[in-house]
Length: 446
Image 1: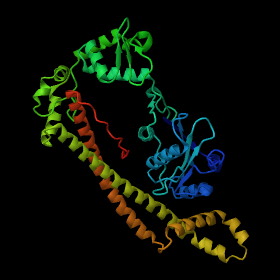
Image 2 (image 1 turned 45 degrees about the horizontal axis):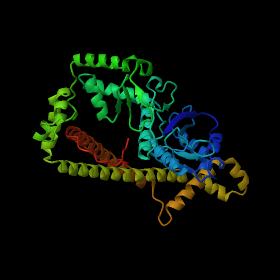
Image 3 (image 1 turned 90 degrees about the vertical axis):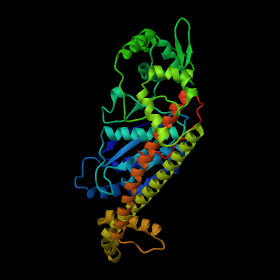
Image 4 (image 1 turned 30 degrees about the vertical axis):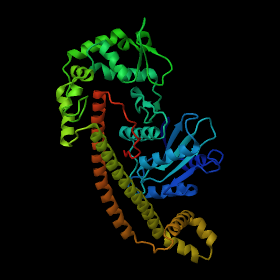
């Protein structure tokens, strides 16, 4: 698992950068990555970007720490996760340095990013939405790389403008599962059956005990263990109370278990009988409508439709990411062209100066920035004439339009994947069809 924390840097930016670049901590600087800046002069570049902001603000930079559990990942993998996390979280708009420290008992990433965007010169707006966004990215990447995922502590959510989450215990997971199941069942025996369907092992005896897949010990459904609400008596009372309430029907999405169109065999099964007792028929019609609208008449046709939908989603996501990479490249190119053109007159005077040492001392910052931009442009534009800022801005606008269109297509494709996933889950649960292993979708975009 990975836990992220974040704080501001208000004064000693150079000192903070030097700390995270420490070669003893970063495998002789092999685990260092910089975006849109040069680590050795990043403080100067950050400051140059900040000068363009209408409001300079109080903060020089943000320092994000991403810590991993001991033994759960490798330095190289952690560094890769950190890069993807920073790229997605910052959207290619903020200069940053990423380093992976391996000198302590646990591997952890340090990300120092400018507080001001070099694209639009706006500050990072830190609020609860930003923290939730960073958590979703972090958790998704952990799942993708096979790392454990932590849940945020809802009672302490961002009280100190800091995102911090703690591992979810087996007991907490069990409580969450119990809360989900209670509204769906008619009595305690029904509750235990549904717990088994969710993968829990039930042990009956003097006490009712349950154990999740992968869990070592059983947990008793007792007030002393889980609290009164999660004891056998507490659960029974909550089920009775839940049955008295009018069920809430959500018409805006497909949900619950239904059968494939006109599947008589399923309607005669015990699964259908169980489903019919606990779910509303109106909800079933939504999934049935999906199957009829898409002319899905067999399970193999459903699987083919899933493959087709997932492929369309992956293709759209790949196109989106390609355009986003090109847009990031254009933004960096635009930054260096602007710096190069703005500081070229200063550098020309330096070249012609009779007292270069004195001139350099007086204009050290400008000369450093000019040389950095010149170096970047020389490497990127080896066989090409330096493009004008106007032409780069035109390319940037075209790419931004493509990005917006593709993002709309991506959201639509993602919704279709989610919809058909629910349909398949409903059919599988209805017919007790063995679940086929689903590939991890790497093309999630927050």
